Length: 165
Image 1 (cartoon, rainbow, N blue to C red):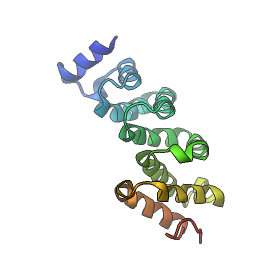
Image 2 (cartoon, rainbow, N blue to C red):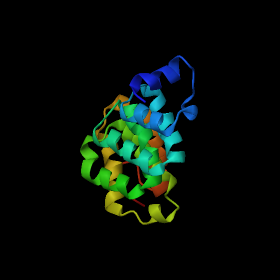
Image 3 (tube, rainbow, N blue to C red):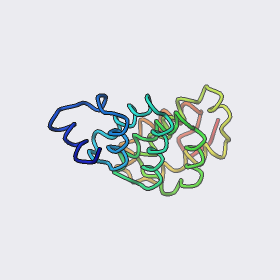
Image 4 (tube, rainbow, N blue to C red):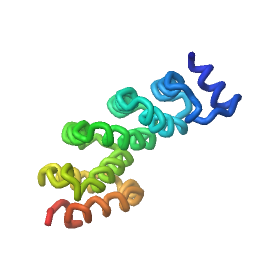
């Protein structure tokens, strides 16, 4: 199977992402053949082959493939598979994480606030994550304000930067 075969299935045979073979999904994801179908393809492949989906999602994040929306969409798969990877990614890349990836990360972490993972996150890590918000441009902050507010409320962080209560 090659790139043209996958595109033919999607556009000429009107196959949905769910109808594609694992190999076709891998090709669609790895080559970003149709960017708007990649998030759905990653989720579908994750149901069938979590290891492969995780590897491809990491590749998108690490190599900054696609746009910020695609990168943000892959965070959920990565976090679900290996949350520690996302935590280390934040620690090592906080200053260069785009606003959409950031929004996905803080949403995943906020959801875990009452779970063992969230309860065991360090104060320093939460402050690092909270402080990144203020470094985005105002229009970017507006786009992710809901995620940020959910995150700070989940961990009792005050709005004037990163004081945890």
